[in-house]
Length: 231
Ligand SMILES: [Cu+2]
Picture (tube, rainbow, N blue to C red):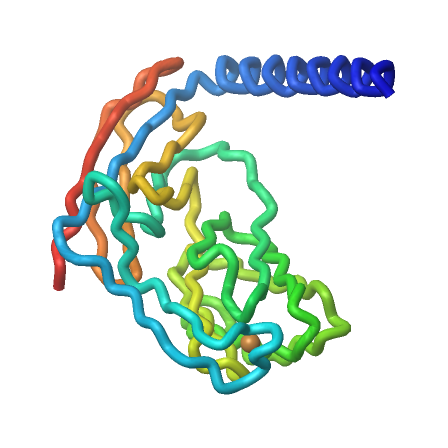
């Protein structure tokens, strides 16, 4: 038992070292820096609570819609932060799960390309997108269809709903360059942003968008903060 544990730990350490080494090399090769973005909101959170009238064994008796999530120190969660002109970012496969009759995560960022849509609920969902730059999707995903792949080739903020569960709301940010979503403290990190002047954009589903220019330095972390205004 102990032996297995030691071997596994050693493997994990080696694996970690490999990841660190490649990560470091990539950063140096691109001459990029990190931009740490801090997004604040001075207003009150807006979380809608409602009773569920369908599929309650999977969806629960009640649910919430997270319109504006404000954490500690007025940090705004679920904001999309991006350096849209940063070239050479490595595409990461974007995945959205329909779980507990919610889109998880509530806000997803992806570069133009393919999105994997999961249904881990074992019930019927029906994705409905309000896209205009990309073809709109209105497609049933029965419980046996655990994953679907959809294409979003054009940059756009896409609203997601489900025609079976009226409360389901999510957002897909198709953004070129480097992008991330703020955490519960309102912070997001953009990694490997090419050095030099870069436009940093912040977008929030109900609070709109803002941008600022920052000077990114290779191998360093540049901090920038935003304060979103209520509408
Ligand atoms: Cu649904």
